[in-house]
Image (cartoon, rainbow, N blue to C red; front, side, top):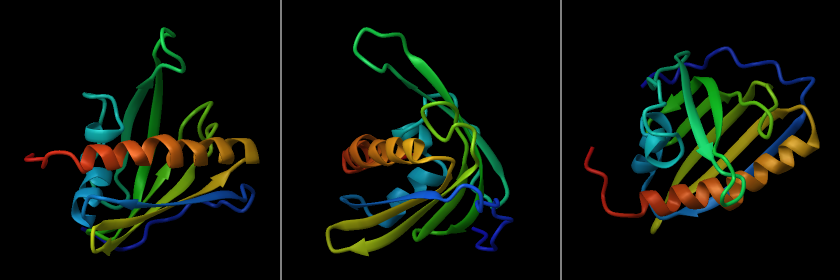
Length: 161
């Protein structure tokens, strides 16, 4: 993987950022792979991922969720490009979503992976939000929904793909 940095977005007028840490049960390799070529395993809607893990390579995927049981499913497109890739250690990418997410801002997500005896310490930083409301909602989603779901999926039976 290429570890040469890419051109990073100018975040100077979007100072809101979040940091979430979680002890994950999976090893760094499984988590790195989940963030670079297996989004459909834990986050993206099946069949929606267009992603090649190379610096400066753009990607696209959709998520699908129902805000409440019985409500219609909402499709949320996600766009970005990889900025830095260090195998089993670091994934940095831009992250653009619509309402309920980044509100069209090109944020930067950095996922740092540190091996632990029983898995991995995952530290996720997301910078470049327009306001505190988007930052707080996104932080809660990563902390309470997305990363716990990733941990559950990756700690399950071994993935053989």
